[in-house]
Every structure is written in C-alpha cells, then in structure tokens.
Image: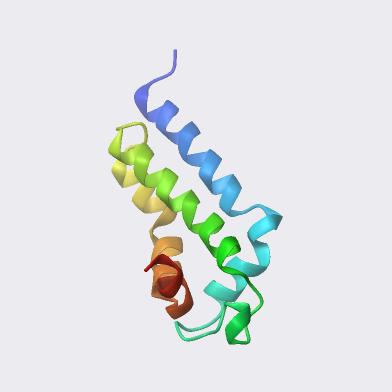
Length: 99
C-alpha cells in the first residue's frame, strides 16, 4: 500500500530526473557555477536561447502545480528544489526571459 508521502516522493523524483537530464546539464552548470550576472542568453555572449531557458523553467512551474494541487508535499518540494529555484531565478538573464 502506498502512502501519501510515498506517492509524493515518487512524483518529486520525476521533475528531479528532468532537471538532472543531460538536456539541461550545460545550462544547470552555468547557472550553479557562476554568479547572478553570468550571461546565459546567446545574444549576450551566453550559450543558450530563450526557448532553452523557458523549457528549463517550465519544470519548476510543473513542480509548483504539483504542490498547489497537493500532489507533492510542499516541504518535500522545498527540500528537493529550493536551491535550484533560487540559483535559477537569481540569474539576470533568467529573470529577463521570465519577465
């Protein structure tokens, strides 16, 4: 029998796997290994297009929807993803794409 916590953990692992996928490896490395002013967008000497950043950010939106729908326990999502969210959001180019 699966408990709510087990189901929540299973659901949390799927977005984690997506974020850790090789598709995003270079973007994640650039976000996590540099400060907030590091250029990500190709039009600003970075390596990535708006679309790539949007695809990465959409994973966080999905996580938010899962938390909002009570499918993932909020504390579990915080523990799993808060560092990624904060590092990503603090990057100036990510903020430009979002806004």
